[in-house]
Image (cartoon, rainbow, N blue to C red; front, top):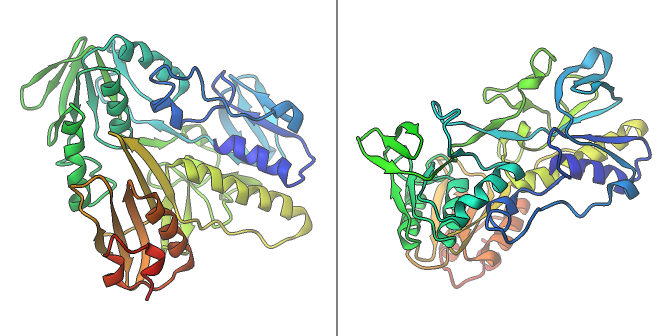
Length: 391
C-alpha cells in the first residue's frame, strides 16, 4: 500500500523521473484489508490495486527481494543484483510475529499476505475446527470470517481481555461478549504450551482439537534487511523517521508500518500499523521529494491516526491517540449495538472509538484535527451530534 501510494503520488504531482517499485512478492500490488474478508471467504480472487502502472510510467519489479542497503553508494542489494537510486523510499511494512515452537508444524497459519489468505481459504471451506491464537484486531476479523464459513472457533488470548494492548480494560470488556454472540469460544488468561499436528495444548492442561491454527499475536517492522546500513532503528525495530519522514541517512525516506514519526500533536513518537498511515504518509513524502529540487520548505507529517475493523457484524472505527492519563467519556450503552468512547486531554478531544456510529467518527476526527475545546457534559449525550458538543 505505502509503496504503491508513494509511486502514484509522485506521478500525480508531476514527477517526471524514473520510478521503480520493487516488491518481494510475485503478485501485482494489492490491498490488504480484503484478505481477512472477501478474499478469505472466496468472494474475491484477489485485491489488486486498480492502477495502470504502465500508463503512469511506473516500473514494477516483482518477486525481487531486497537484501541490503548501501547508502554510501546509493545502491540497494537485491536478489537480481544491485539497484542504484537517487532517492529511496522504504515501504517494507511489517511482518507477523510467529508463535514460538510452531515453526514447521503442519496446519499453522499466519494472515498477512495474499498467499496466506489463499492457503486459509480451503480451511474455511472445509469447516475445520480452528484455534485462533490472539484476540487482537486480526484475530477478531479472522474469527468473524471463520464463523461465517461455519467453522468451530476457539480463541486463545494470554491477556485477561481482547485488545489488551490497544484499549483500556473498561473499553475492551464489552467486546469480549461479541465472541460468544458469534458462537466462538474465547479463552483469556490462557497461553499456548505447544502446538502439534491436529491439536493445541494449553498451559492449563487443556487440549484443543485443531484442524488449523491461525496465529495473530502482533507484527513487527520488516527492517532486518537494513542491518549495517546506518539507518537508525527504534526499540521495536522500526525506522526512526523525522517529522518529514526522512531517515537518518541522506536521500532515504520511510513510510507506513516500518517507520515511526514524531507527532507534535501528541507530543510523542508514533508507530502506526494501519492502512490509513500507508495512504497518508506517501503524500507527504511525494511533496518533499519533489520540493527538494526547488528548495521548498519540507511538509510535516502529523496526522490524526485512523483505522477501522469489521468484526462480528460491527463496524469499529478509531481516530486519534490516547494515553492512560486522558479522561475517558462514554456516549451510549456498550451493551447496545452502537456506542462511542471519547478521550479528552483537558478540554480537547484527542481520540475516540466508535462502534456503529460513523457520524461520531467523522465529526470527531475533524474536532481532533482542529483542537476545538469540548463541553464534557454535552459530549456525553449520545443524542447530540459531536460537532454540537463544543465548549
